[in-house]
Image 1 (tube, rainbow, N blue to C red):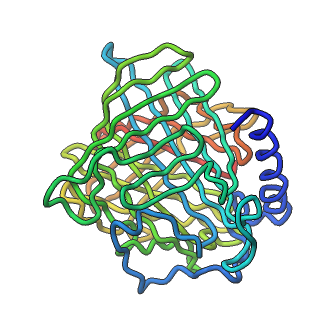
Image 2: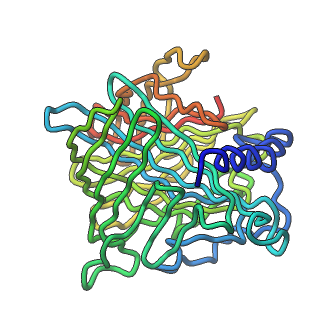
Length: 364
């Protein structure tokens, strides 16, 4: 696609989708807005693979989201993010095809080192072949950004397992190209993939693949470096994932010792206490929900970021698991200055369970 056409598409997408969401904003990016006409998230739904690696157009929003914590051959740490969002502009059955399709694709990529943070954003309209997702084999793309299976899963692997993936993206001052591999199946978040977001019952369908091993290269500022590490993929879809008075979230994904994994999120209400929950994932992929009240998440220290004060250092405690850790960012200035801006970057945890992982903070 030439630059002029890309510019026009981005402008149309921003005007048609993002401005109305802002005008009626409820929660971060309008995700607490009423979702009449879209499919509901039901606790009785059971996820089915490989189909659920693909899109769910009856729901209003979903994402394919990967973060990776990396180490270069010289020992320097880094992190990358790759996210593709599908956003329905109208309930199922409304809209047309081609340029009139009512599905919008938006993508974010980030690359963070201790010295720099890089990010880029893309848009596409569904129906014209510029972006999309297929489930089997998994192929998520927008322009030349790719998250694609390069081979079939290993023989005998679980039905939810993905074959080797290639993940690539580039922006004006950065690029990366990584290989992700695992033979393990996914971990279901919440209870059997039904993830509750508030006391009033807002929820999503949510699963993760937190067991990827990674190799490849990154190029912050155009300087290519070989890296290895671990990656975590999240898949989530919903029609109203937030309550109307939830302004945003603080979300952690952590690679713990012994190949255990921890996902924790803190959804902030405009009034009243935050809703805090998560899942503890065993090395075999079995996932146990952490009920509200079982997890303590407290801000410890702030930094000036993009003209605002943000809590970049945190304490997480799960007394029943004997866990008490403190997280610190690799780079406090990991601000994603996209149309819906947020903080996203790699963190390191110290304490009872030393760990590396990612923190995302929205709505600040």
